[in-house]
Amino acid sequence: MSALAARSRGDGAEFEAWLDRAEQLQVFPETAHQLLAHTRDEGGANRDLEAIIGADPVLTGHLLRVANSPYYARAGGVSTLEQAIRVLGYVSARHLALSLALAQGYVRLGPRAAGVHRHARQVARIAELLDRRKGWRLGPVAHVAGLLHDIGQVILLAVEPEAWDRFRGRGPTTAEERAVFGVAHTDLGAAALARWRIAEDICLAAQYHHSPLPRQRRGFAPDAATRLLITISLADALEAPLAAGDADGVAHILERHEASAAAGLTPDAHPDLAAAVLALAEA
Ligand SMILES: [Fe+2]
Ligand SMILES: [Fe+2]
Image (cartoon, rainbow, N blue to C red; front, side, top):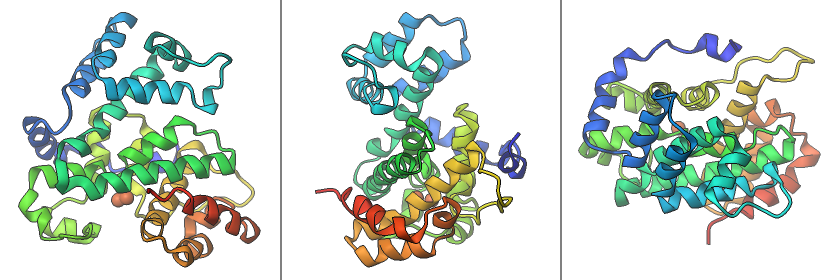
């Protein structure tokens, strides 16, 4: 167990009511529920997985994009879902498909969740960029963790939309969430992801992306869970200035944010990275 996992807050039993409510409200698409059922039924064949994913064109497109990414570079490219599942590996493909299907929860909530969705999408893109720059080889996990890191907000705003609207125009702080909803999106999101058997490193990134980073022992490289948390924390902090087209804000985060130092980003690397982040601005 990693140091981060040891810090994690148990099974999240207090969040069950929220998660049950989200399920009743069908916040997440049918494909996600089918994939969850498939995960529980280990006897399921490859063909079933292909049929579930193949019925969802958006999901199929996502999976093909990942299978064709440089991380899985393969001569000739991948053009069918069957090939994509083979390239990714059966278990990884199922996990990735489930994560991406859950992320579609943002879309299903319509305009109310548009800002949260835009933020998550951009955090996923920045996380991929940071991973490439660092050569940490987190691969698709960086993207998926970016998409899912604020999934707790999706549940809060789906279950209590009127309360969520009180924060119109901005996301509440975790302290405000605890005061209004009784739970913070970080803890709720981590509990949801754990219930859905999403990889532990992704759960930990959801839980701790607003917390101080664990202290790292000098001379030791961070473990995989910590690398992912550093990546998501920094991507999360960079998204607001990126969205505002604020180049000084991006530079400031790279200079001052503890995740930037924890990632080992030295000042000479900042200008080039800042330019690459700003290039991710959505048209
Ligand atoms: Fe967050
Ligand atoms: Fe966030």
